[in-house]
Every structure is written in C-alpha cells, then in structure tokens.
Length: 277
Image 1 (cartoon, one colour):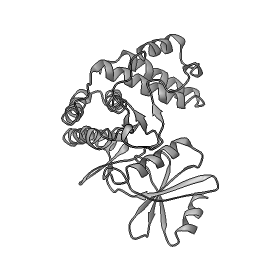
Image 2 (tube, rainbow, N blue to C red):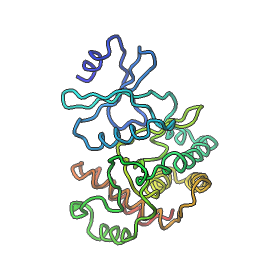
Image 3 (spheres, rainbow, N blue to C red):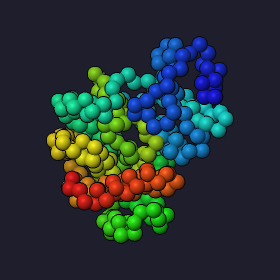
C-alpha cells in the first residue's frame, strides 16, 4: 500500500526500504534530483506530530534532516525529508573502532550542548510535549514489581534541573548518522521540552548498558565535550535519577507489549537503580 501511494505521488521513482536510525517505516526515494526519505507513521500518532513540529522548528539546524513535504493518505502521515548518506553511529561501536567511537562521542557531546540544548522553551512558542521526571501515571505500570517501582518513585522525588530546553528524547549513537561532514540526528519522535539531563543521562545509560567495556572512556569523552560548551551541573547521582526517569518513560510506552519485552525492561530498571554512572 505505501509503495503504491508513493509511486503514484512521485512517478518514476525507485523505493528502497531503509533501516538504521529510523524508528518508523522508511523508504529511500531514488530517481529524483536528490535522494529523499519517506518516513511513514499513523496520522494520529502523537509522536509523529511531535517530530514534525520539532523538525519544522529547527529546520535551519544543519544537524537535522530538512523536511520538504508532508501529506496524509489512508490514515497515515508521509514525511518527505533529506536522505543523509553515512553510517549509523551504533555500527561504529559494534565495529569496536575505539578511535572513531571517541570522535563520535565527542561530537555527540558538542552538538547536544551547542545545537540542541541551546534552544530554550521560553524563546520559542512551539507546542511540544513537556518531559518531566515523571510523565505518566505510575499506577498504570502494574507489571513492575511494587518494591522496584516504589524504589524508582522515591529516587524521582527530586526537583527538575535547569530551565526547559529542547530535548531529543532518544539521543545517542543509535540515532545519529555519521558522515565525513559531521553528524545528522534522526528520529525526533520523543522530542519535547525538559531538562538537559534527560538527553545526557540517556547517552550515558545507553553506552553503559550496551557497551560496558568502553563505557567509562566514551562517557568521559562525551561529558568533557558537553561541559566544554555548557556550565550546567552534571553528576553521577543526577545521571542515575534521569536515567531512571527515561527508563520509566519507555515502560509507560510498552504497557501493551508482550511479556518478554516487559521482563527485559524490568531487568533494565533494576540494573539502572543499581548501576554507578
């Protein structure tokens, strides 16, 4: 269905399914003056609305793909945007190329401070979700053991840090395209206004969980780059608080997921509460 809609709107194109750094269904549109991406989501999906609003807001930012057109058909939204040729950042970690991984994390820290968190909610009247330490009714998370949920809730009894800034919401090597000219940040569905620590904690959490052997080195590289461009306070305790917040936000999204998925995120919540970042 999606292919026929796109080929009817853009005759004489070739469609190629795309993976690597794109959450929703996506195709490369070849045969046009320049290759483009068609990213497809349900028209009523709030995450898709947030991404579209965010990308329009920061359309002049070289760090993000440009949106050329959006349209809706058969209950789906089609977002046509730049295709950025390069390698997904997580593949660099998987290749165990520590030199390029350090360069990647240096760029992640620099761009987060200078291109994303510099955008303050107070300066821009654009509707995006508010990302607080607790963003859903925790009573709905009845699949989490009560003692574990109580421990997480107690940790989040903390004042939100900093004024609301633009938060990507799923920032990290898995959502950047690494090119010879720098980074392109994709998948802004979870974007919103919130504390700078939401993104910082997620980067540290991601690398510590998935790449423990290089986590300390890469975390230090990332934080050094961020601190070189921002004087906002960052500490191990704050990273843990906001990492727990991010994990719970994911767990709010998987209420209807299968048993195995829920059990994996229960494991990750327990690990996050016990980890030292």
